[in-house]
Length: 464
Image (cartoon, rainbow, N blue to C red; front, side, top):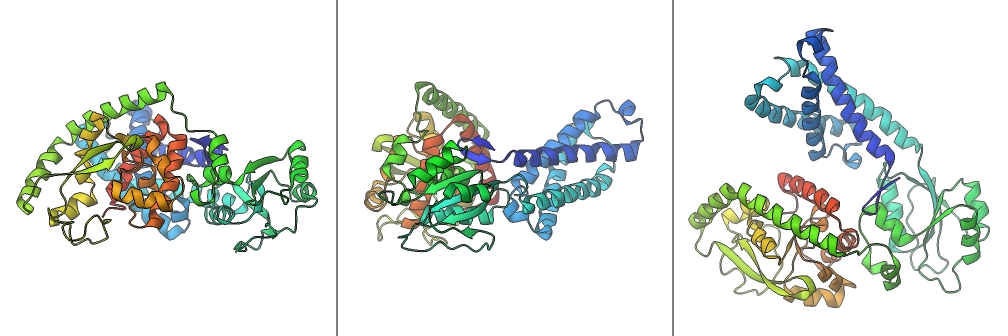
């Protein structure tokens, strides 16, 4: 297993993507042989680099069309549609590249032969890989101890995510559990009690025991787990396993002790300095690149409705320091005159005609790059919120105040994983992601979030 910012990724998932990139590359070479003959490298000594360009563009398009999300593409009909969409997009991008740099083209009519070859190879590879996943080869086998929300979340995630890398073979529920666990997989055994846990684990060929027992006094199987540990079985806390499996926490089922003793929450001087440099450079580059969009948006807002171009509102930043956040105005200037502060709703009638457009493509957020330059915000972090809502949420949601240990962000882990929220339940779920980010934040994770933000913006996910 690979652990990237404390979320687990199986080595075979990395192999899956690399193998697919290899098959795309091979498809380019094979098609070139078909069209140009065995002396292709004598005719075109730059073929290797041209093939790399096609492979890179194809992989990017496959990623942005969710072809690597096996929960979406496990049906071959859906896979076929998304493959055609992704390769269609790659042809458009490559046509632009060839228009600008004609020398990187392989030959005319190349893609008429290339597309059938590459799609056949990928479909064949996917069939083999999915067959391996369904058989559970090389999965880590686990037993789960406990009950409640974390246990149910682990069961559901392993059941729905075919490439998670784990097989749940047995569950031992707590005796006094208020609500029984819902287990739809008939292959998962409900074990009775903690007695002879090591023997049961060995008989089931288990690699790991996940402990999510909520009531530990009196009923915690110390001797049984100690026997398992010294005999070589890995023991892991339910909260930690859930975090690595899902990329989020469950604040409603996490006690302060776990936060205190868990890894993460590192805020060294070097890490803070590098993040600030990242913010300044990224904000300057984006302001320059997006300057035509800014000018065009200014004109549209002026034409569409009366009122100021920029909407400024007080938000709370790091350590609850108030600051003014800036956005392009997307609502009527009197939007909250009669209602007071309210969350934006889907199809909100306060939003102007141009407002719908700039919200969908996140253009209204561009002025916040000035907040990033000033240091009020970071490029990546929890989304800033108004004090009116913060006071309500702190009373109802545990650990909500911990969001303010870092600067708010223009984008964040919660935004790319969950999207927009307009209720207490949504705020809890977004906090689960925000705390995961704060716990594991790094420059590499910021880069991943930025790439996923581009994907979110392109497909208009979560905008209101």
